[in-house]
Length: 332
Image (cartoon, rainbow, N blue to C red):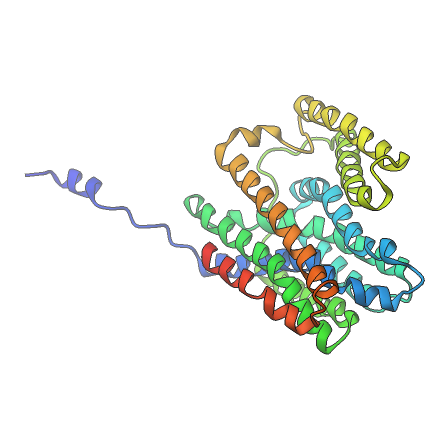
């Protein structure tokens, strides 16, 4: 007869119970990530409407309503994550959501294309504060063995939001204007901010943050920003344009310097040791490939359907709907 101890150890262990508060916090943080993801792709389908509203600008200038967003988001993402670890993730998340409210309202009432581009860059910087903080602050709410569930839900919602944004934008532009497309973010961000005020708890990095790596901040931010700028403007200005070439060369020089600085600094802007962990680098690689494939579809297909096939906005929205639906089924 087996001993009582053996029976107890052989019994299946119960899965950790996730508190209700943790799911509510996950919903709030995911809402912040959804806002960032939605605004990263919703503008793509509004290019023609923006060009008609600002005829003096031209398509190259109007395209910066999207390029400027990606430039600000990519350039300040690492800084946003570091600030969240140092000063408090909930505090940085709140600051980012406040910036979203202001930038969304400013985008909707922008009288010139340059003010609109500036508002979009402000929105991107706000998003760079929201994204890393929104993920990091919910993990302490979940048992360690359920972190994968929390990260999966957070990542799935933001990815689906990026995919479905052109569909929603197409329908809104068919029955309203691009100003509503931008303004709708403001009240949603305000509600998310208020909900987070009650449901989110403050947390910081477990290890001592140390002094801020100012050299790493400069190198990393410039390297990423210049690379995004060159890739965005290369097709329009030509890959031999001196500014494009200079941006690419500077980015190529700064990137290894940033890696070297991150290896030697006691509290680097980017902790490269994390990428030794297989789940970290595989998740980042999968996310990179997904967005490379997705961004080409979310940007090019709406423009192709509109300019080549001559479809109206509502038809484009219906045509784009199956992709996000099946994405949601596949990730659930």
